[in-house]
Length: 70
Image 1: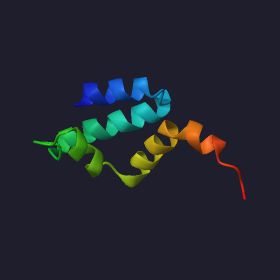
Image 2 (image 1 turned 60 degrees about the vertical axis):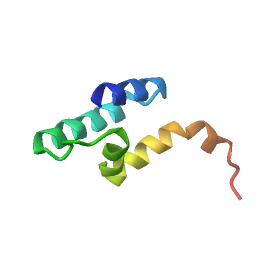
Image 3 (image 1 turned 120 degrees about the horizontal axis):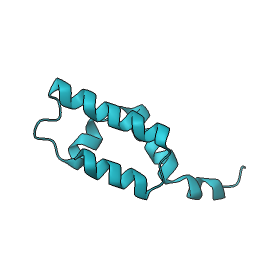
Image 4 (image 1 turned 30 degrees about the horizontal axis):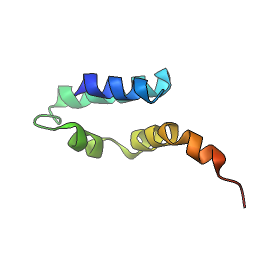
């Protein structure tokens, strides 16, 4: 699961600082046992909103850049 997350973030050109935050969350969650039996989708749903938002911004940045201010 962590390898898939790393591959995904590298493919989407997520900055290393954000990648480290996500990977630290995986380590923390695994150590607490909260990821037992979780798949990729479930683990994303369990991720804190701040991490999900950060990933969404980086993934969709090129689209957001094109939006004009009103």
